[in-house]
Length: 346
Ligand code: DAH
Image (tube, rainbow, N blue to C red; front, side, top):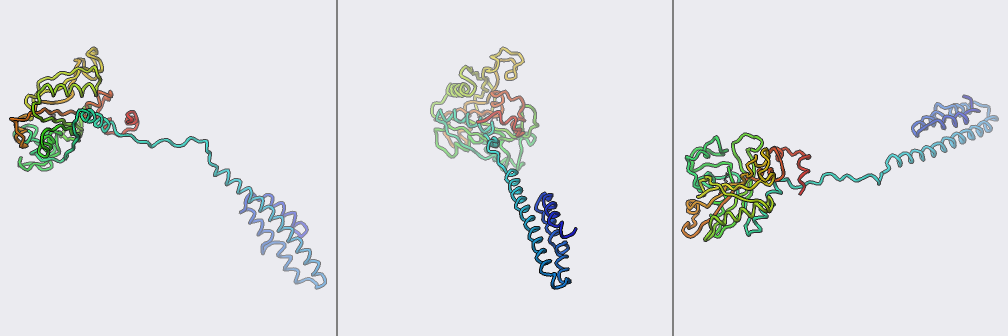
């Protein structure tokens, strides 16, 4: 490259530099220590003194021209770069915002809330109790002697097993709160108790080792079995629909006498579908256990069974939610599959 063509070469190379890094290379090639211009400047010293001023002036002109060419390309590339950054970073304000992530209360929580509300509407209070319970409250205070089969290690999850007087266990029902509540409250008592219960049980379509119950207890002067039936009929109509009919069928529980199970008419098929998922074609399905509080239970907590009577009931929350919402396997409550949970927004 001779000195005459340096400006033209600089212009061509600058124009083909596509970014600032490439232009930096052109810059050092054209003006750096290895450049034709730098070499020419070194040669100036060897020239005859008379020739130096003209050659020097010409060299300065060329250097200025090359510098100007590079500078103008630099400005151009800087603008292009700024435009590119702007368009890369562009925010599309018309894009729809992310709307996910809004949670909802689990169906079991919603069901507990709804059922407790029905009883609160009748003047009941809501109480909760411990899940790790003394054998005394889970069994003895509820008229269930140490020889009762439910007390076997195979049925109950014990934290401390052996001497019946000191047993500690995971409560197998919410009924121990009957005794705890009466011990700490004077009559009259109207209370519902929701909570988790535990059983040494294998999982199938309708059983889990951990599930939820709601206990109910009413103790007052003059309470009869018709109060029990009227109260539970009201509950059934509120929760399952106003056309629901109820039926009490004799049963046995150690802590109620007499004891019964509450059956309700099938809201799903009205008894017309022999293969009904809810009633199996019988037209009725069982929703809870209940009965008149055994006088022995009142005595165990220091209440006077000569003056007071009462009724109690206990229901399984999962079972009720399953029949009402058409859920066919109990595992859907614990698998946390969003496709299931999202169907039950509060
Ligand atoms: N605790 C019983 C169970 O888990 C249910 C029950 C039956 C509760 C009768 C009651 C009752 O309060 O009176 O199977």
